[in-house]
Each structure stands twice: as structure tokens, then as C-alpha cells.
Image (cartoon, rainbow, N blue to C red; front, side, top):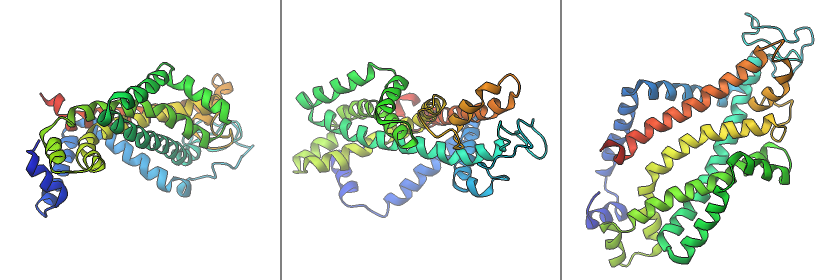
Length: 301
């Protein structure tokens, strides 16, 4: 942590010297990721998922929505590497197309929860007193309910659909981000550079967003990454229960839901969607854990 005056200079007047520092920090993060084999593997898998989400719907070998009643429940083969489902639809094509749906739903939900939770955490930690108590008591009430139960309740009220799944998952993400950011804010606001900013007449808004918020970013980045995996699982669970995507949509959870009746006769229709959900959740959790070790100074002590 730099001294108060120096910190103010780097924030209020950005020097060209700061650019190499930022670049070197990013290079250091990338270097640390490449050193950790498990983190590197998970990051590669995540990159593949992101690419699949972007171009997947346009490169599917078969139409993921078109039935083929001559190939119902066909086992994996050269023509259909993951086999076909109860309607003869190619499972690999549906998983590939569903990557965009699953990632967009999860990232959107976590992003909304992170933005709202971060703002609440900053306000709660900075102002304290009654504001802090009010926000934290509301968070405590939400923490009293298991995430999936809370999401089911919200979707039951709003109605099924991917948009409402995003709202529900974002809703239970808010308290976690709020508490995380609040804790960091309570520590940072007592630091010397924040006191220096106050003494120089900086406004509360400037202190919060120019001085305190940047210090919370490492924790937010780590928790954001790990939350995506949890959110994918929650969204898939809601779709599995019939509260998320339409059964005909190539959503991973919906694919499991429509295929569960064939688990005994055609195991592949359940295995491959379940496998991709498992690997995706695992990859985001492992990558988030590796990122935490790199960004969190406390873990280096």
C-alpha cells in the first residue's frame, strides 16, 4: 500500500509510468496462472467454453432443435459422437448451442448481483451506523434461506422462464457480494491514503469510488469467478425442475430434465449434459481458487 500523498497523485493524475505497472501486474497474474497446472487447465477449459458460447450456435453439426425420429435414442457413434435424445436430436449439437444459454444466464445473474451487492457493501461499510445495520440485517434475513430454495420461491412468484431465473439467481447473489465488499471497505476506509483524501477535501463519492472501490476489486473478481460455477448449477437445477428454460430449449438443465426417464435404457442422454455441467462448475471453482491465491495477499503470508 502506498502512502497517502502518493496514492492521491496516482488516482487524480494518471502518469504514463502507471501503464507499465499495470501491464507488468497482468503479466505476473498470467505467469502465476501458467505455473499452476490445475488452474491453467481450468482456464483453458473456460476459454473453450467462452468460444463455444460465442460461435457455438453457428457451428453445430446438426440443427439442435430439429427432431429426427429415425435416430431416436441412438448411442454415441461417428455420426453422433454424444448420441441422440428421445426426439432424435443430436446431443453434442444441443450441448454446444446450450453453452451460450447457460453462460449468458449465469454471467448476467452474477453481474447483476455483483453490481448491486458491491454498491450496498460500499455504502454499508463506509457510512456504518444505522445504514450498515439496516443493510446487514436484510442480508442476514436472505442468508437464512438456502440459495436454491430462495430462487425457487422467487421463480414460483414471477413465473418460469430464463429471464426470471436470472432475476432469482441475481437476488440471492446480492447478500454475498454486499458482505464481502463491506468487510474490505471497513478495513480500507481506515487506511492512511483514505484519511489523506478526506483531509484534502475529497467528496464522499470520490473517496468511495476512486479510493476504496479499487481495493475491493481483487476480492470481487475472485468471488465473481467462483460464483459463476455455483450460478450455472443453480440455473440448471431450476431448469431441471421445470422452472427455467422451455423443455425444447437446448439448455443443459432442461436437457437433464427431459432425459431423466431414459436413464436406464439410454444412459448417454443424461451422462453428457451432466458431465458438461460438472466440468464447467469444477473449472470455474478451481480457476477462482487459483485466482484467489494469486490476488489475495493474505494467502501469501
